[in-house]
Structure formats: structure tokens, C-alpha cells
Length: 330
Ligand SMILES: [Zn+2]
Image 1 (tube, rainbow, N blue to C red):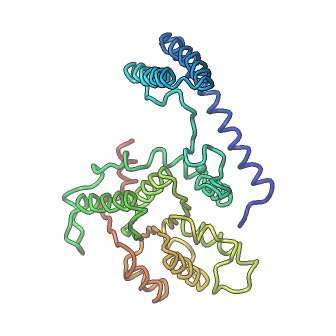
Image 2 (cartoon, protein in one colour):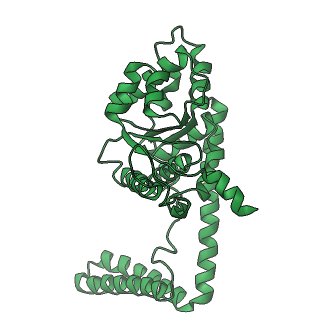
Image 3 (tube, rainbow, N blue to C red):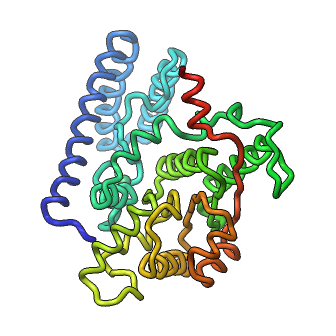
């Protein structure tokens, strides 16, 4: 899938709007500071007049006095910053504001699309905007261990559900913190309502914030998208070229694998997708209600061996949190 002209224009309009909003925000900040800290405005005026002097001295090649003026300007700049910080503002409070400091909200870095542009494309092409709202409330900071119980023992591992949750949390956190240096894939499995989707949200939010491109799909969204695009191609044995984002975004999340209607198309597309991403060293995170043996039964042998051999397996267990939450509400 690539952008149509009007989609491209829509993204560029968002960038223009960002620039306008941030400029307006900065104007407000200036007014605020001038009002609260009049000394700041005075220092700024002084810097302007010293700068004019500096230019004059440069023309006159008055080296000694030029150095003095330069030093005076430097010390004024430092005092200005001190004034801000000692009044509880950050020292860059009055500097240009950008949503993306990598491309200064232009969408491009040296003629190439910035990661923020790629994410905007993904959000538009794969309707990811609904995910963004969820991430505000479901992230590492809001993960609740009190939903997991020490007395609930997982019969296969012998660990209680709290220990498993802590382990899962740590692995996911480590995954995001070392995302650029360690290539890893995650498979979270466990029964319904034990917090698997929540953890995928934690990871998505954290990586989006660190400027990575993330596509978030439920399993059937993924296969629907692939099936839709397949009409352009002839065979189920390839991933349509139009799905490049799915193959090369920094992280692909497939939530709830196993809830889709499985057939040979789904099975072969799943393998192609995770295999191709693996070859490209692009991480994938999958959550599923299926047990490992059920995965083996449901999908092909080669899919199972990719998953079991190249994914970190994370088990979650416990009571159904959704039911627990509902109970707490009533
Ligand atoms: Zn950017």
C-alpha cells in the first residue's frame, strides 16, 4: 500500500499544523516569561545591543575588545538560562518547539522520510489511530501487578501468576530498552484475560515514543489486510509488494493470534510474514490464547519451528483480569 496524492497532502497538512501550533505555543511562552521575569527581557535586550557592538568591533578588527564583548554575551546567555531554571522552567523553555526533534517537524531528514513520517503513513494506511488512545491508558506505567495472585499456580511451570507476570513485564521492558542493539522476537501466550494484550500495548507505546515505526494488528486485521491486497497478485505464496510496511516496520505486533479463521491462506501468509521479517531482522511480537501444542496443530510445522526457535516465549497465567475488573466495578 502506498499513499495516494491526497493522503500525502493530508499528512503534509498535519506537519504544517504542527509547526503552526508549536510556533503559537512558543509565542505564548515568551509572553509568559516576559511578564513573570522582566529581568529576562532586559537581558535579551542587552544581548541584542552587545551583538551589534560585536559586529562593529569585528569590522574594526578590534580583537581585544571583541573578545570582551563575546565573553559578556556568553555570560548573559548563561544567566538567562539560570534565571529560567531557578524559577522552575526547563532551560530550553523558550527554544523552538518540535514534536519530532529529528526532522524538526518537516517529515524529512536529508530528503528521506523521517520515522515520524513513516509512522504517519502507517497510521493512515492501516487505520492505527484507534490504538493511540488505548496506549494513553495502557502502558508500562499503568501495568498492575495486583491483578496477579501468588496463590494461583501454573501447573506446567510450577510458578505462581505474579512471578510469571513480573517475568513477562521485565522481558518486555528489556525488549524495548534494548530494541536497537538486540534483535529479539516475543511470543506471549496464556489463556483469555491474563494481560497479554496489555503488554503488547506497553511495548507499542514505549517504542512509538522512542521514534520507532510500529504496526499493531489483531490477527484478523492482519490477514484481512493481506487478503485484500492479494487481489493484486496471483499467488498465496508471496506477500504482496504493496504490504512493504508490514514487512519492514520496526515492530509488527500481531495480537490474538488464533482468533482468526484459520485456513491454508492464513497459514501460509503467517509463515511468509514472520519468516520474511526474521530474515530482515525486524522484530515481531505475537500474543495468543493458544498453547504451544495448539499452535503446532493449527499452523504449519515450519511456522511452529520459527516461533519456538526464534521467539522468546513468555507465559502469562491467572484469573481473567477483565472479569476481575468488572467485579471490582460492581
Ligand atoms: Zn520526524
